[in-house]
Length: 192
Image 1: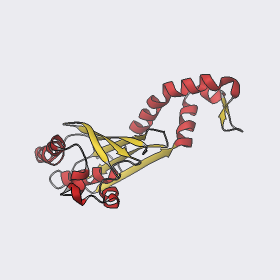
Image 2: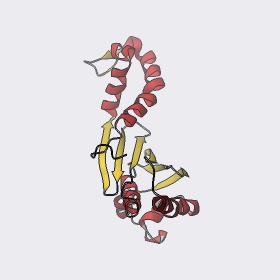
Image 3: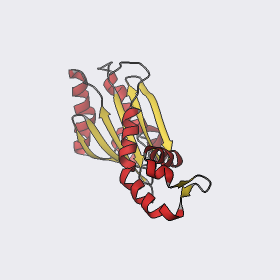
Image 4: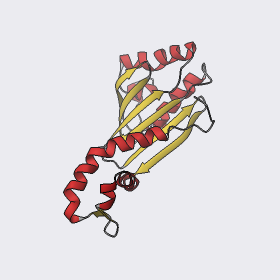
């Protein structure tokens, strides 16, 4: 079974009127008809090709769970939907040259988390960290976790393992979310 990846596409800043119209027609109206992102890769679902789906959407399957005027929540298999977001950014960029989108994503098993930003030209910045970096980031953010870590063994000290695991699970998503928000960056300063 595939690891699910939670993706969230956000419009950063304001779209102009033409951009809002494209967002409505190209994204929201289509999702109202079919939640599967295959529709963005293929005109006919029968034409589905796994490799092409991965190239155009970013994952072998992906579907929208929730969508509204400022964003879309997507679940995908194994990887984030960066190519799909890039497609959306470029489509919006045809009518709104100041479009800025962000994509945050998390693997359900914490194999990786990340954040990407997009402009009319496509992907602008991409920051991803893997499981070991996530553990280190969370550990370094909470004094008790740092004290309960055995650097030599690369695991929690035995006498604190249960407490450490519980505390880690209590704080990890807040720390990951803060990291993602801190890394919503664009290469052009003041682009949003």
